[in-house]
Amino acid sequence: MSSNEDQIAQVEHHFGVRFPQDYRDFLGTTGSLSQFVPPADDFLVIDALDELIGINDAGEFQKRFPGAVVIGGDGSRELLAYDFRQDTPPLVTLDVSAEDWSSAIHQAASLSALLDQFPQTGWKWDDTDPVPS
Image (cartoon, rainbow, N blue to C red; front, top):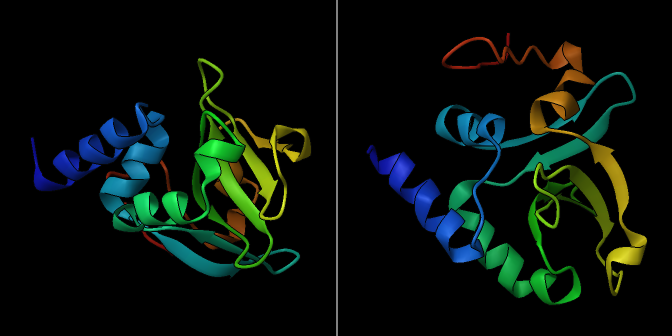
């Protein structure tokens, strides 16, 4: 197992989950993202693996949203999280000030589906090393 795979496994163990394969692939290649994405120039952040535990613990997200693992957001109030209450965890958006799951909004079925909404970013999920084009 590579060092990166070990780190992914450690973070998964901390949360008691197994990340979806497209997210694991993203962590193993691109790792993080912080940019405006067309066409509306929305800001999208996908946090680096080594930041996930600290971010989730600081926000007490597992207390407010049992089964959630926050992986990013919009750099402001909206958080991007996996909902591990489901067998195939979808990505959802959570308001940073929300008290519980009642404020969650379904976002996308997977990370690749989310990024596919922004084809102008040039992310290539078929490649072994996705890079902006």
